[in-house]
Length: 640
Image (cartoon, rainbow, N blue to C red; front, top):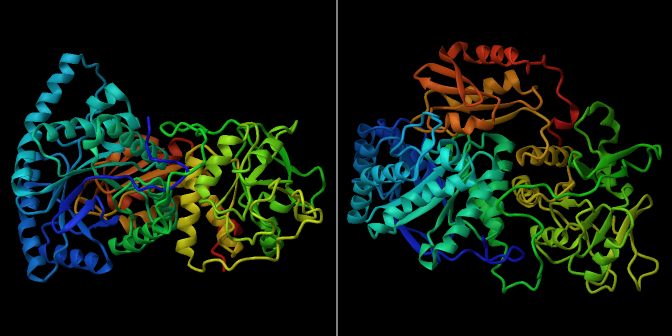
């Protein structure tokens, strides 16, 4: 199955256009930016104000939750108020559980989002086997519930998003397909087939998840299935990592999921979901789009190679373990293992390492593990078949990376290297390839250089003396958000492809920030867990407590719990499902009341919000995962 035109060269996926009010999605339109207001939908004044603030920040489509028919009816007043104030931003009604609310909302808005997992189903986590006849009967029931909305949207020219969430798949889908990307895709296609049978085509798809690996696989699988179904299944896609959280972690996770798909040409509209005020989402989304806009559409690449990974199912590339010297000044016996089943290691350049060498002893586990110039790393242009063949002939596995001076996008370069390099050789990933000046002719005969204890040395045929590259630095970008998003997209995408045994962030000069970014990318990609992991949804009108202050309280109490995953959900819509991978969950159950979960099972009910954080700590203790906090390590403190 084919999920993109060329995994080694950027081509944006061609889709039909879907109009949402005056905004076109897909076709020849630019990638659109969306967000969502956070106030109660019945507060008309606040809803209008927040929508205007989002539009002023550059949001092109605004979503508003409509949990009840009453809320949906008030969308008329909100839309009217916006238009009276000269704001023509299209409004999307967000629907869960209540088809009646969708019908009412479709009378007033430009687009309706429905979730196939709960539009006509109530989630009970019931385990049962469906015969084909029973399954068909369920689909007929859904058709009866969904068709009236399709007919109304078609009549009024209202667009629709068929938005699957990994955390809210129906019991029917779970029992037939499991909690899988395939289940997400099939859930959406069931509803799409009904829409198409009614000759309605003004819809887009989404496949959102809090786990970037699942999200990426689901979107790839969806595109591959749409390609198989035929050219008229060319519907646009909305991208998002749901429940990404806040701060750097959320931006990194969003960049891994959204950025990697955009780099493959997938995606026509995006939303970055932050547990922060909604206008903060817009600069992040715009920066991700700007990164992709820097990649021009190209002719089909000449990089003919078979991908080394299955794009629809994660599996880490099977390399052999090797021992690498940590740094030149260490005793020769001080080596670290990488590759195979070992942890993915964090690498630093010598010049960067020297800036923090005075506090290495205070960094605990979260410090640079390997100095680049000490590790005998083989550098290669992956297009140079003879250079790669030379490494493949080595008797022992080598740590290999892509040269800094080549003119390939990072993701394409490392995918090509993994495709041509024998799997036994571990790979070092880099976030950028243009931060060090070239020392050799791009058309050199050998194309391989080796870094050793004496520094980086060129060993190309025809260059007997080699040339040191350490001092030939090119000015790097000073915008840390851009650096963060670029590093997260490039390294994170490759990690989700299963490629990489060590990583080097060299696009950020501040050593503390580069180190923190390295570990946080590994954490967000699910490749190496070194601190507490949080799944936190963005605020919306369904939220039953203040997500920002609550998240801050929970983090203050639990951020020292290494390897524990905690989900913080404002309501039940995606709670149990998105918490399937979490150890513990904190979910709004009613106004002022919280339910606590272990995995996706509720174990404590209706806890007063004022007591809920302490009760969560007690629950963690009960399950043997609590430890008393110690001083935060120096490596993760903000650095200048």
